[in-house]
Length: 181
Image 1: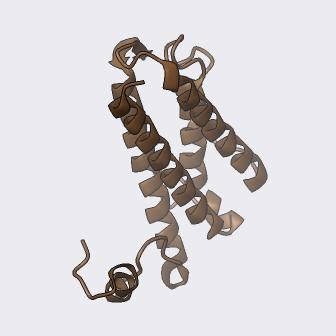
Image 2 (image 1 turned 120 degrees about the horizontal axis):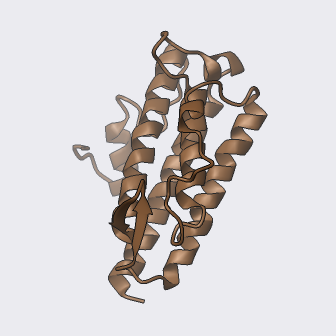
């Protein structure tokens, strides 16, 4: 396998896992009420966003190399309606999406990086399709984290370096004070 393609796939796996973990850590901080809270009439709850992500993953990554990523059985509009009724069912759906994604990524190790896959009848290289999905999931996980942070207010537990902790982090990481980015 081309070493650049191999590095790309490993990097993508790592980033997908990072965003999966961020979403789960944000959801874990929320009560059941907060998880399903819709801030305004046109806003999505964290549960709705997680439901949409799971539906997208199942559609895009099922038979990734052989079928269009927009499956005929997918009901995208319903993903933005009522999510699974309980946290347990929502999390099972969420996990199912990620399992599908990571299983599909495993099949790409031996795939031709120049192969074309379809998403909504538009051809993409494997690299383009993976990038497209990574960016999509990162944007929605960012929404989930931001909404969870707003809902928790001062009780939010930071998922990265907390404000005012950059110097301590850099001392631990580098053994010295440094400006963080």
